[in-house]
Image 1: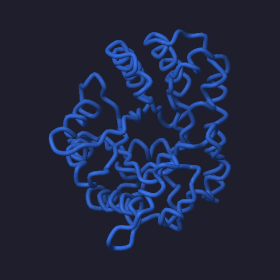
Image 2 (image 1 turned 60 degrees about the vertical axis):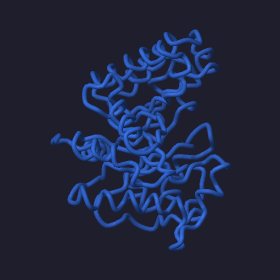
Image 3 (image 1 turned 90 degrees about the horizontal axis):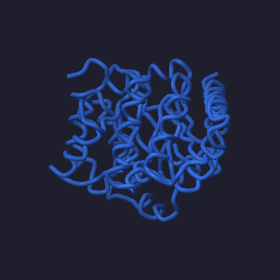
Length: 289
């Protein structure tokens, strides 16, 4: 078992005032804006530059795997090189893979993205628990034994998810709230005494979380719940509103921005990442005051 948990590494980033999650989304239009070819080499170039600009400034980077996967095996080679660059630079990586399955199939996904020594090894991965939180067992073993992390989709900003995520379970909780509660319970049972848990949730920054039955009034007992929040920047969420949006569960917030930092091309990339990192740090410092 590793002596360093993902939660403890996140806690160190938060203690240093770093809460920005810098997205790596090499889709065709952004690559064109960067003057790069829409191919695996272009995706790798963008990824490497984001890693270099994010090191010591952002809490983590989040490559969107689909934009590499579309190039087939060459895209995966490019991604492996970006991930290796991040490990070398000491930058935490959340692989945005949104994997979900059962039994050995899901365990194999966890082996690919979380196993130490895997070419695709990342610090954490995004997962879907549509078949039930218990199906995450294969990845939870990696969390507990290898110091890895998970971010479970709970309340996402796409309108198609609204009815499902707000649906009520037999005990009256929403599906979204059930996912949050399960993550909190797992952290409390496994990581009691740690400042930040290693299992977090994905909550959209463009949502009214109370409308999804999620209590934002206070942090739960036990480790703080990591929250990966897409939707800031280009999608309309304002980091200045982080206190209002996430309330008491925003203490361990990772504010994701992708197009707002990538859209200007490589020129000024480091300055944009620095500006957005400073903005979310200021918003959360104000929240804790």
